[in-house]
Amino acid sequence: MIIAERKPFEEIKAMVAPYNRILILGCGTCVTVDFSGGEKQVGILASELRMARKLEGRPIETVEFTVQRQCEWEFIDPIAEIVKGVDAVLSMACGVGVQAMAERYPDKVILPALNTKFMGMPIEAGVFVERCAGCGNCILALTGGICPIARCSKSLLNGPCGGSQNGKCEVNPDIDCAWQLIYDKLKAQGRLDALLEIMEPKDWRPAGGAGPRKIVREEVRLETLDV
Image (tube, rainbow, N blue to C red; front, side, top):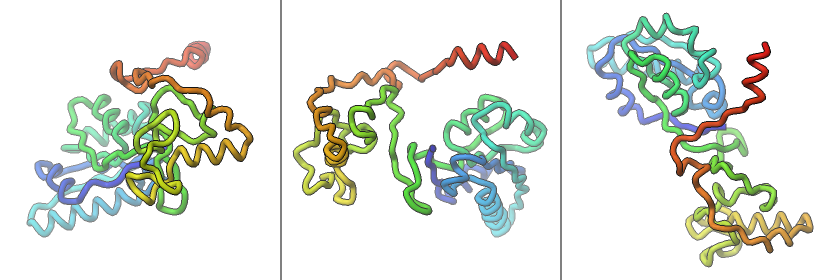
């Protein structure tokens, strides 16, 4: 899932300063799960903005709404009339959702309320850790299901650097060395021979080195045409 966090309130307040009627739009998937942009957070932010404007003597009208996903047309098309009736949209989605709204409603000002951080998973309530860098060339079969691109601070492909000590990363002692984790996992599985395969320098083009990425799944397109 995509992990994001809310921008500082002063930054949000400055972004919406020119506008008097604002749609605060939540997203019901990733940012709801990580508690940064769901229906509850929409209500909290709306209350904060109204209170701040009241103290300034400048009332603000907020419209609160949450869709299932802001990154798909089928969920944001039905709110066209709501979007039409406001000065600007303050999106509480990830960066993909913000851009989807901006593309679908090109004449409307779309503002981001969140900073998108990474793709990760929850390891306990309220704690999310990065697990995937979306590099476009997955090597998890060779590394025991542990990604060195996302979890090694240097994204090394052939074992740890010289700075790791006692299973910890030299960048931050609170971070486990990804390659120590990989070694331990492969050893436990009796698969240490996988480490004998030298990985060549990574081709970063699938990760976006050749421009914005696009994936076309022909089988899905054919099924849609058949329907």
